[in-house]
Structures are given as structure tokens and as C-alpha cells.
Amino acid sequence: MTHPARSLGARGESLARQFLVNLGYEIIASNWSTRYGEIDIIARFDGLIVFVEVKTRQGRDTQSAFAGISRAKHERLVKAAYQYLHEHELDEAHWRMDAIGIALQRRGGPVIDHIEDAFDW
Image 1 (cartoon, rainbow, N blue to C red):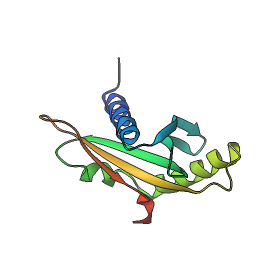
Image 2 (image 1 turned 45 degrees about the horizontal axis):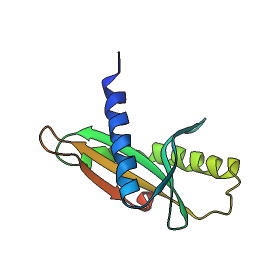
Image 3 (image 1 turned 90 degrees about the horizontal axis):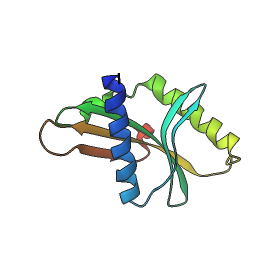
């Protein structure tokens, strides 16, 4: 039996990947795991490596999705990003961390908000 939160997350990540591809991003990896945690999406765009955290919630707006990214989560993501860069010999690469919030509405399509360089907030 599928866990509802995992199913919701997987649906959101799929929507996020398609959203990024439509914007011209090249998806390099999905659900890349390290001892620090998982990076939902790793992509290339405009000469950058982009690490993307995706949060999905049911509702009308993405506010609660973005609220789900804690300071501790941010710190783990940064450590995981550095590990990815090191393991792939990309220590000198230019990179950033983005966040995508997705709200799955009962009626109508999903609401998708993308914040570039999200952890500079």
C-alpha cells in the first residue's frame, strides 16, 4: 500500500520536473540521496547546477508548502549539495539552490511557484 504523503510528494516532484523542463532546465538527477538527506531534483540551467527542494501540499496556495522548508532542512540541503559537487568533481561549478512549492487544489490544476536562489530569503 502506498503511503499518502509519499504519493503526494512523488506527484509534486513529477510536476516540478516537468515544470522545469518546460522552462529549459536539463534534469540531471532526481531523489539523489546522501547521508545528509535527499536532493529532490538536480538540474542544469544557464551554466549553473541547480539543486531544487520540492514541497507539495493540498490546498489553494503554496504558502504552507514553502513553510515546510525549515532552517535545519536548508542546512542539510547545503551539505548534500556540497557532497554532490565533490563526488562529481564539480567543486568549481557555479550553483544555486531553488525551491518549488506546489499546491494541489481540489478543483483545477496545480499551483506551482518557483523561487530561484530560495535560501537567500
